[in-house]
Image (cartoon, rainbow, N blue to C red; front, side, top):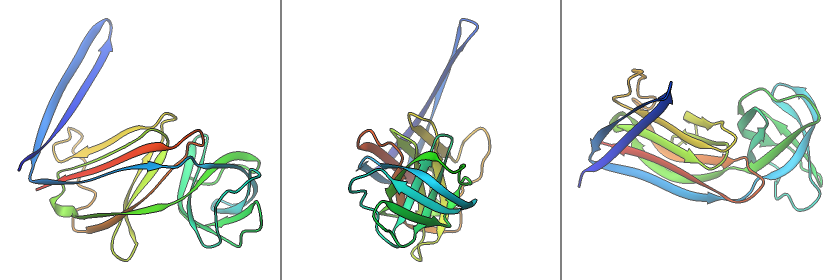
Length: 204
């Protein structure tokens, strides 16, 4: 059964419309759609360096435990795979991870314990990568040793799509060539409500 991926683009400028679409046919697709709970709120109360500091979470059960890996979000940036130190009540020490440098101390943040989902695909056979979130999010493609192979960072305040395909006009190379994806690790940064996240990899 053939899988069709359709890209549509449109724009308006000077009172004129510009639009078009292209399609890709694939043999199959790996697809995940998940609902991620609302992120927890707090403040970066200590900033030791670009990836080390301490969070003070808003009073109440934040659910972050010692040795957890979390996604961390703030206005203008995010980090993923951040290691949690010894939690004491609302105080959550953090270290390492990847992404943007930590903001200045006293910056409001949201944090979410990262979740893993199976997502097995031969990267060299991938025809396209698509990710969509209703809020800022990170999607980390990982191998069976949990090493990160590629990350999609969705930065728009209201979320949005992130796309790559083999026929993209920018000519960007397949970021997963030569590797095998085992699973994805995901988080989202909105504290207002649960948010939907979708990830797809059509393949030949």
